[in-house]
Length: 522
Figure 1: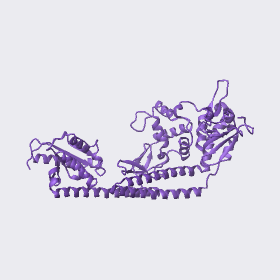
Figure 2 (figure 1 turned 180 degrees about the horizontal axis):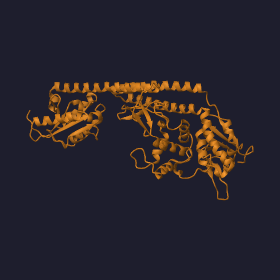
Figure 3 (figure 1 turned 135 degrees about the vertical axis):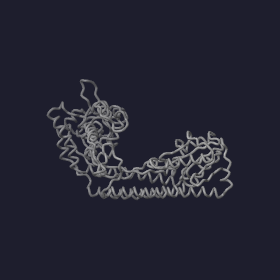
Figure 4 (figure 1 turned 90 degrees about the vertical axis):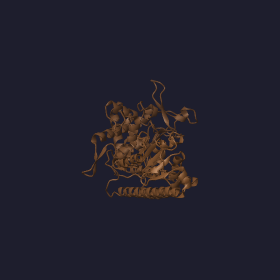
């Protein structure tokens, strides 16, 4: 072939894992490109050579706009690569390992721009004219694409099966380590084959949980950490509310790992969470404290924070108090320094249809302080544990079956894309998300059915209330409020009967009398 002395020569190198960068992959591809250019009397343009490090071509990630190959394709489409130029690649599978039809589309885009693709492993040259007029060249390119795609697909299935086996082994408690990617407060001891807790970091997290259980807001916790000079675990320069919130929701603190897998069924990479694995890590926070914080933070109890995070908790039923008539939140109102604060239904206060009845806050608080012992005496057993266990096992089995069904649908959709298939996949994914949320709620319910755990949380509240019984001025409303919200989902302030009906999270109520009367005037 007659090579023009002014022809531009570019190289494209790709490897799919960071480990290959440390090995021979880059050197091999770079040296082969340089030798080809020298052998044909051409100069390799090293300034505009393209590469993708640790990028897979199976999903076409290397052809996206911000990738090496994507940049070359963009330059071709904009006429920045002159016709008659050469693109040197080790083999066609470096360009793409997608399905042959999609791989051929990328090859066509390059050669249609007047660029000759040279495969260095076999010396083949692909141009638009050759692919249009030489059926064997087209067939070879398609067969190379088919072989590369099938190799990647097989490898992907084997890797997925290996990870699934590791997940099953970890869930069954059969030993071994699932992953060495650890939370920030753990390190892997290779000699002892075990996790080691970095106590200085673990104590920071325990302090965050103690603050939250004491009713301190996440903004205030972050401010405390910064003022004390505690360094964040990651690359951030200071603590933020979002970092504190993530740690308060991170199940790894009680040793639970939430594995996941990458899903490409929608055409975009996303991580799909799977069933949690308990005892995957050493726990640094007790399950009682974890569940208490979860109870405070979950959606079933209204938060007392938000934009009022800097304010002190105004009464011990903040975020819990409910109207007996319409179940709306009851809020604290005060009409001046000479008037004692009262609880009023929000709907009545805003004139949206409920009766305006006020209840003195001090009467409710005094009753709870006085009769807190009734809480300990009336801890419910909750639903039968056997029934909860059976329900848990049934739901876990359904999740496992649905996960397998989802994988089958994803493979079928990849083999034969269709709108109907995508809709079926989305529907099953939604069902799976719902089932996982139900399982998480069921796990929490099983734990909260443990009377010992409830008594532990109530014991902490009782200590605070006992101190306030002797010295009312010492009442730590924020800590009491946080403790109550960890075991109760609501408190009906029933002004019609003079009782506060505290609603247990696992079902049932316990009532405390705050006023001896049958019916209050409306």
